[in-house]
Length: 191
Ligand SMILES: [Fe+2]
Ligand SMILES: [Fe+2]
Image (cartoon, rainbow, N blue to C red):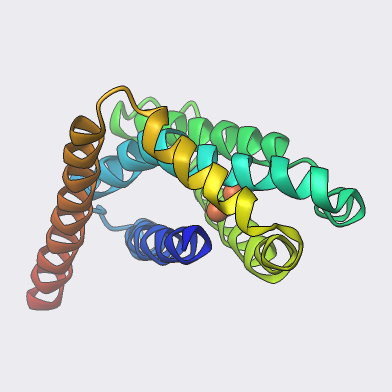
């Protein structure tokens, strides 16, 4: 079921948010975080949610608006929330870039605030969706709605095989990031 897939994607997103948080705590201690890991997480978030996760949520939300406008209104403007998330991520990328360039245009504590703000909002967005949005959709949408969404999922991509390959690649990238993070943690534990 689509909602189960979206929930699973949330679990994947949470794992990467945790990795980012781990690296941020290294930065906060005044040590050098693993910037390769940080960049990999940022790059993942720059592509994955808008390519896969948000379009599906938007489709479910459109159906909810039609079936239960009051419930949809209660949730608010989902697309705007997704846009704001992308803006926060853009600030994270700029902040990390500023650290790497050592230009300190962005002060150290501001870098921390920007990354923490991104992580906090991403988590509360996921929590809101699982608490309010998904249950409202499960309650209001009819079998035909889910069938429509599944169909547009399948036909939305010009080449389903290509899209499957891309999805597998994202899985591989995520596994790679988690592996890199484990190595970075092990290395730090040795020091
Ligand atoms: Fe969302
Ligand atoms: Fe979501």
